[in-house]
Length: 219
Length: 236
Image (cartoon, rainbow over the protein chains, first blue to last red):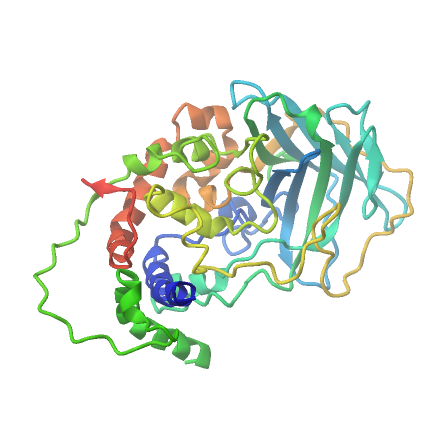
């Protein structure tokens, strides 16, 4: 097993050298989408950051029978903080499954609503094969017409040495550490949707993108 | 200086000799899987200077294995693209456990016919996995860590906004991970997040993406070449 032992050793040098150049001062900071755009969502830049509307990540994958979509937002945050269910934010997951790839053929939209005391609900519209909306409580798996929805507080699924890149960018001193995960031990809010694959599969490529918008204008 | 940083710097100091192994792996090991002393170097010719200016068009035009789309098509428009007839996993869609940043860096910097998309993830450049395990079944994401307050889930009656979409103003958008954060200049980020894939496809942000990618490539190409990897960019 000489090869498998040698290759990581050799490439270990590359990882460090690469990081030092990539994240030189002024180049910028790489993350998934957390705190972007900074002028609207990053508290270090914006006095009124819109955490609720700050997309962290979007995921889309398929199995033999399903397409799973997940939008994460309002994170990362400490593990003693609650989820964010802002009724004034409109969340969009756009799906294109026919040419052109830039048009939204399946416009999935969700909003949060308020109930009694510490109760919050979610309403999801535009789901293929679902009559009307799927509505119900957060922190509960909702299912209607073969589609599952769950909104709630989760672990932040992104893993990345953001702190190392920030340190390198700010100081010019190499601080990269592949054993360090800035997003470890942090949570965020997310909505996960599972849809039968045959309701999306037309034989064409499928394109997915997410968006958020605030009622009445940005904060 | 922390012990972690000291260790990192020691590793960096070893990088040159270790990278040298990459071009000739068999010279680094004997049959017992142990490092051996490198043979005395023979006289080496004067190295050819590495170009400092690159053309990234070849990077944008190369096809990402397993997806049927080129790098340019993967980034423009800025969407996650799924071929439902092929195996799932970034860049064919995006699963929770995919090492998306390392794969993205490989796809935009390396000649994929020589170094596959998983090359940098194999280092790994970043943490290779989430700190807690994902669930195998719906909702797949891991439960929240710690003991945060969770909303009361017993409610059945809720009040939702019913305003039309036109009453809302865009804040954020996302398709491919790290495209907006890493490849769009700061002064264009608001415009980029206000736009839609149709504007991406019209080429509104192609000059921004190309300029940033060119700058990064000019800075990185020598490191990639020194490590025995093959950049997709060509000398300008």
